[in-house]
Image 1: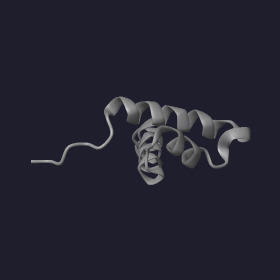
Image 2 (image 1 turned 180 degrees about the vertical axis):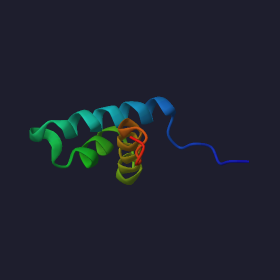
Image 3 (image 1 turned 60 degrees about the vertical axis):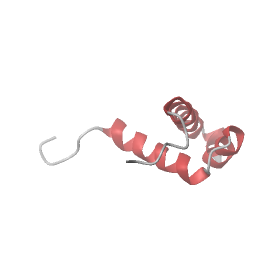
Image 4 (image 1 turned 90 degrees about the horizontal axis):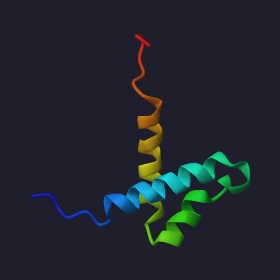
Length: 66
């Protein structure tokens, strides 16, 4: 049996969306993940992982057939 998730899916989605939006704006990009993680009470590395995965998912499938 898997351990219960520490953060709800809603919180993960909200934090990821906030971080991605902040990173798109050059004015707020620096330190965005740490700042948002602190605001929402999330560990910065957890948010960094979620953002990295969201960026991969948004890129879609990659490969020589593309």
